[in-house]
Amino acid sequence: MTNVNFDDLPYPHRIVSARRREDMKNEIDTLHADGKLADIVYHSYTRLFDCPMPEGYTESGSLIIAAVPRPQETVGFTWKGTTHWLLLPPTYIRYWEITEQVETLLNQRLKPHGYSATFARVPQKIAAARSGLAQYGRNNIAYVPGCGSFHMLVTYYSDMPYPDDTWQEPGIMPQCQKCSACANACPSKAISHDGFLIQQDRCITLYSGYSGVLDFPDWLDASWIECLIGCMKCQRTCPENRAYVKWIEQNESFSQEETLLLRSGLTENNIPASIHERLDRIGLIRFFGLKKLLEVLSRKLNLLL
Image 1 (cartoon, rainbow, N blue to C red):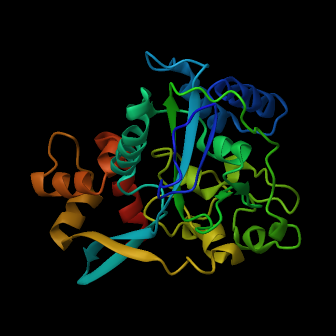
Image 2 (cartoon, helix red, strand yellow):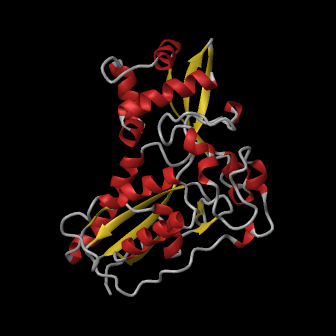
Image 3 (cartoon, one colour):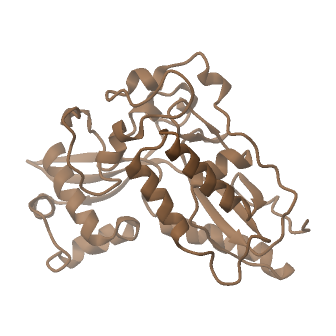
């Protein structure tokens, strides 16, 4: 075990052995083989494991999982004289900036003991649920005490040994047993009334920018889409988020001229510097990549405005 003290880390966190990376891969393979994980979601997970662990980090080290409380955020787009503040879930704005901030905090504690940490590409929800940091809601979203689902999960490899971890069966929150608020609020009926595995290929988030521009299936009504990226219907109706649902912060805004340009379909080669700067400042370019982001914004702004 280790004598590194993480008690003053300002975020809820857990530590498990890095060998759990293989356990997570096996879990995803099993879910897919059993027909419980849609192909498009499975392939996004398998890409995480295509990359080897960074040099200097092995399965004899550890994984450190943290949950950073985060608000919903809005970005403003002016259209026909009105500024529309479009909602984004807590997980997109400044994702990499926050990830690097937490990594710095961890290394400040690890380096005096001869250890280090670096970002880990692993399934964040599985790591959080299996480590005991979070429990699943009926909507298959990770809930953390003190912030509900309004958080950003970040995980790091460390060369600090941690052999005697607690790796547990993932659980659904007891509060969900007699509650179906999220299932009732989901217009696509992706959420089951039993357990916490949802029908991923019916989840609005999949078609609402998270995966880039995907064709809407015939069953998806475009009026169901409300967020600039992703979807918040199940989280905003969840009783466990009652204390956090009004935590919304305004971010950048774009003029009518800029909104028109974004709607028309800018490319990497003709995006004005002022628009690029603001999209970069809020971290969306790093999260999605510029080409994918511009395609998503064009489609979504034409749909929502």
